[in-house]
Length: 288
Image (cartoon, rainbow, N blue to C red; front, top):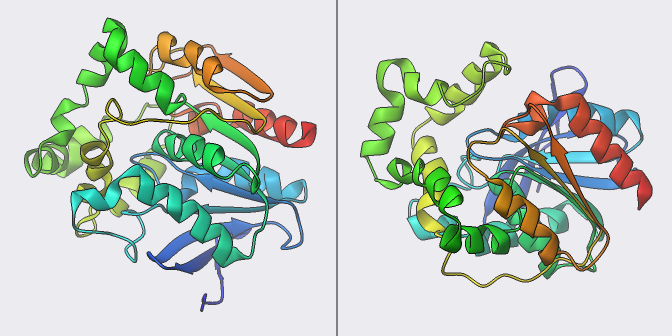
């Protein structure tokens, strides 16, 4: 049974969502009778990265929930690397919606949360009304770029050190997590970075976050196209995802599709360009 939400940052509430995989921590806001929106965060953030969008959604009458994904929620933190395969995370989306009593909902995702959202939207088109993907392209487009595009291969190779168990954790947490902190752009407030770092220094949390990379090579998997109305936001200054993967994502969308390039914005779009992201999200939802 879900516990009673507690007040959090005045207009947001904490919520616990019990599923077959375990209990997810989440942030919720907006009228319970409003149109439902589920927001999936990226690595290495947590649900609070959507705080700007959550508040705007609530103000427009939506019921919005942003869970801390598996590994970030202590109640869903498998010890085995295989526990972080995308198939499990996609199943989490369905189980979270079931636990919330949502028959149909809009799905939003950033980074790895967007990868999960792409797959979930392809798998559950009768339940997911619209998809808003941020930063991460369709995994099929990314997988192809990783096989054939030297630029994307170079960008992805910078993440190779994250896949070495134990070594990556020690390096990232050394000197008060200096290397970990350096991963966020200066546009994100230090107090927010401190909040993320505190979460990642919980026992097992950083290993869980890194296991998303270790469990999902992407290039060996088969993906389906997405048919639901989709809007994809990509920062032109993204150092992880190159233009090839971003541009070829259109070939993986068989329904209405909008691709927005955001100049001067890097990988952490929901926070680097919070207002723009929110406006795009609201416009997409209002359109469908």
